[in-house]
Structure formats: structure tokens, C-alpha cells
Length: 324
Image (cartoon, rainbow, N blue to C red; front, side, top):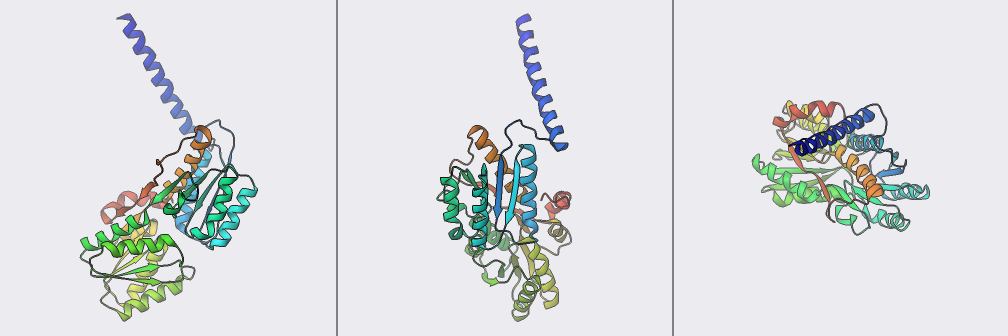
């Protein structure tokens, strides 16, 4: 009996120590201190974001918070032009960073420079776009949603809502992920779907283009935008055009959550951008520290999750703080 009691007390002591350490780490992170004592490695994230893209603000926030926890010096840069993005990656290579996170929206422009990083011994994780090319380019893993699967989920949801004619609005020409989303939606949608290409860097042009399309074809009963900021433009275009089309969108932010709550939007497809940034930094840290790799050669999926009015209330607070 005494031996059993001794084992139980020892186990309790271990459990207590582990719980205490977890509490200490949480407190350290809350105070802006690293929760680990590993070397202060430098990780760079280079994305295809344009200026003012709130989606990438959320990705960056997740990455920064993981970097704080993991004692990482985090560098962020972006450019929506493929060649310019590649140059930013080259700059990170020249700085001899300890890890690299890149998006592959325009993979042809990124292939050679990612190969340079891998050859230089810099571990690479790809995020958001380029899941098909990630392994081929030598990345450890890809974190994001499968864009084709996400598109197919949209087509299924449009069917559930008895929509017959949809417009898929692409705001960045040459972005393979956007093409895959619309193609996936078209594949599963029982109605007809047409692509509309707009200049995503010019929001008035986006609104005017959608408005003109809705005015010329009143039979369109659904508009699908591929990013949260463009959903608002579509709502404005719908009102001006006098259309009854439902506005749906990829991605989630505070405005989208409000739009779902007030029925201005039908549904949103969330790929959890905060998680993409956070996990990318964490996975690079795990690789540097312990040679861990997640995914088993397959992408680590963060979506898609179809968000409706029923879900919006629970997520609203998180969107207001900029993490969903």
C-alpha cells in the first residue's frame, strides 16, 4: 500500500509540475516574453499580398504571435507581382534567414528562387496558395486549404440554397488559387456559373464591374467573391443595380461577420488565415528544434469551413480583434 501511495504521489508531483510549467508559459507569452529558450532564429515570410489586404493582416498577426512565443525574429514582406515577390525571397536568402515562409499564388515566378532557398539549406514552408507545387519545389509542407475542394464546397452550398445562375468574381489575374476556386465551384454547382475578372487594386472598378454585370443580367441570383473586402463591393453593386442576387464570399472578417448577421451576405468560406500564419512559424520552429514535419507529405488543411448566419454570432468577437 505504501509503495502504491508513493507512486501516486510521484505521479501527482509530475502532473503538478507540468501544469505549473504550462501556466508559466502562458504568462510569459501574455507578457510579451518567449515561452522557449531556443536560439533566436530569424524567419522570413514573403507573401503575394497587395497593400491593404485585411486577409493577410490576419495571417501576419498569427505568425507574429507564434514568433513571439517561439523566440523568433520575424520578418514580413509582400508584393502582389510575382517577380517582385521573388526578389523579396532572394533578399531573405541573402540575409541567411533560418526559415522561410512563402505563398505560391504565381508559382512559375517563384519556382527558381524557392529552389535557391532549399539549396542554401533554408527550410521552406508554403502557405495559402500553391499546395500542388509545394512538394515539387522542395518545401517541407504546405499549410492552407485545398482551393479546388473549397470551390466544390461553394458549389454544394449554392445548390443547397437553390441558386441557378452565379457569378464568380476573380480580383487577381494569374492567381492559380483563384482559378481553382471558381473551377471547383463550377464543377459541383448544378446551375450555370460565369467568371468575372476585375482589378482588385481598384475597388471602385470592382464595384462598377459587378454592378454592370448585374444590371445586364437580372437572372443572376448569386455572386461569389474570392476575398472579404470584395464582398462589401458586391453588396454595394447589388443595391445600385437593383438586383436580388445573394452575395457570398471566401474569407471572413468583422464586416463579413456583420453581413452574415444582418443577411446582407448568405455565407462565407473560412480558411482560417490566423492559423496559416501561426502554424507556419510553429512548424518551422519545430523543424529547427526537433526536425518535426507535419502532413506526411500532404498539405496541412486549415479549411474550408462554410460559415453562415448561425455561426456568425460565435465568431464576431474574434473577427473584431483581428484573428478570424
